Length: 325
Image (tube, rainbow, N blue to C red; front, top):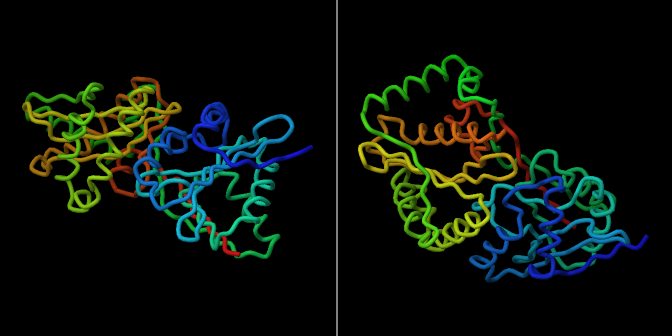
């Protein structure tokens, strides 16, 4: 059987990428072609793309969305903006895909292979270290971060009953306190005709919530977030939730609705309303919506903030895989 590795562009591989992704070992919004193309259009200057397809006589085995930066070969993207990376390959094709891909990579000029944010259970963590060991290359695998997630029951009351007693009591207490405050509501807001308008309201709350988030939100990242909002909304994945108290928007969060799960991407709140725990409650209400819409997982994505575990999350690691010749 003949196995070939071809260099692709986004345009040449896009349709087949979308076809194979739902059956791949890692199917997440962050490895869709449109997400990675959006990142590339905003931040690709100074990088050299290496999008590779691996095929045999029966068809496409998998796709490697890579790029070269300063002598390092890495996944296409930025771990500050994407929570997961991986190759796009169904498990049944993993052996042939990784063997052929690694043979091709061995002929390329690079100093290190730096693969960030590979999810737990990915075949990448199984196959590539073995192939590198066979060549006598140095392999490093380290836990990079955690992406806590909550498995969702069929009802909100079922979710509350599954929480630890203390966490359940605290969440109900905070909700009662918000009720006593007077008129409030959570709502989803996104203007398809002017996505920048709703996103600017989100940016204001993101900046206000913490100094490090204000530093993080550069004009370049603002443009990226707006582009992601536009692209994901057009595919039905985008949710922008605001919590309003007394007619004032006091908290906001972005969730992606993808693959039977809600993914909490980023959030912000007005610190002058912190006594009402508006940031936490806006997330909790988003989780409640996920349950009501039949989703089975609420993924809090990277970070081990305490509130995630108060809302029933448990850890799942992502790893950095480094290979040096």
